[in-house]
Structures are given as structure tokens and as C-alpha cells.
Length: 93
Image 1 (cartoon, rainbow, N blue to C red):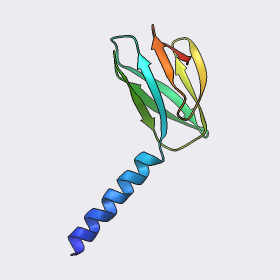
Image 2 (image 1 turned 180 degrees about the vertical axis):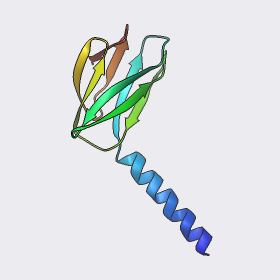
Image 3 (image 1 turned 60 degrees about the vertical axis):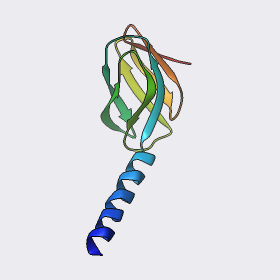
């Protein structure tokens, strides 16, 4: 019983962490996977975009706006705002 309760608690914490993460839907036109620096709430993190795919990249913690640094400079991106990556640069759709 205690093991079951511990497992459920751990699963709930994992789901809460994923649900509260900053997320960016993206289309990466390049075949290269990119890891960019992200400034969220004064902290610097990293976010990874897989090559030649459409998906959603996540980065904790949750925020309304983040700044992502690509090879073309910093871009402000709202939480959930779709972006496109081409030649290492991020553009907002």
C-alpha cells in the first residue's frame, strides 16, 4: 500500500512538472538538432529542438514569455507560440 501511494505521488509530481513547463510548438526545417539558451524569469536554461521535425519543446519553469537565443540573436517567444527554425534562426509564425 505504501509503495502504491509513493508511486502515485511520484507520477503526480512528474505530470505537474511537465504541465507547468514552458512549451514551444515548432517546425525545424533543418536536419540538425539545436539546443538554444533560454531566459525565463531571470534564469538561463536550455531548450532542444530536434532536426527535421514538427513537435513541441519544453523547458521548466512555466512562464508567459521567454527569450530564446539562436544564431540570429535573441527572440521573445510567448508560451505556446509556434516557431519555425531555418538555417539556425528562429522565426515566429
